[in-house]
Length: 296
Image 1 (spheres, rainbow, N blue to C red):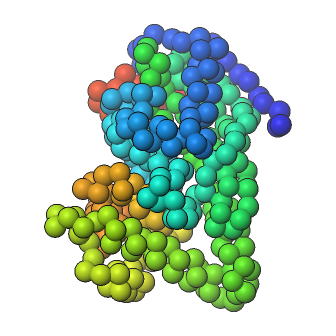
Image 2 (cartoon, rainbow, N blue to C red):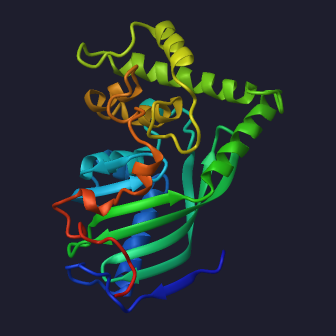
């Protein structure tokens, strides 16, 4: 187990108006979150809809994807992106399944936690268990619910490149131009189209006429995407959102369709993303004015 750096800050972040929780309590709540993030506990949280770990007005963001508002949406994306349901068990998740976790760094400040966790993912796509460092910022309310979070998968671009290389080796196209990417894209498109045809069948949410039309459209009109484009008009974005389609087709079918709905679209740019404040977007949250953990 890696050595864990523990730091409890005595100062308060400015303009943070809420009751403090103790270091031990925050450590317990954070451990509870990670324990529920691990499979199969994440599946239990997903099927509970909605997870009581979150407040009703929770707002959260993963850096390579998008911001989610509300308990229901965050339950689906935080837990559904890394779990399998009976109807989606044949779908190979790009992100894999989390199977264990170990704390590396932990700091508290009032009701805020900053933690780095080493999470081990079983990625069946490459038949490997890999460690991933996840940096997570959390804010809790006095009811011990998560009201805001901001997270980053450290060095995910490196992992993603290694995944493509290993996939290429397994298909006999190592170092052969774009073939590993093409193979990966083709496999994911097959899954997305299967999901669309099986679950987006209502007249209000149907996305494609048939599987052939779906495959042709996605192959010719939508790029695979890079590691930071899980929230843009890419195959990677649709691969993420297809996992939630069986839960609420009326909400998620458009995200895997031709338009990408309001999730898989090219409406964000670098400058906007890096200057946005995760806590500034939720006006009903107690942490809306938090902009820094720096002491006065």
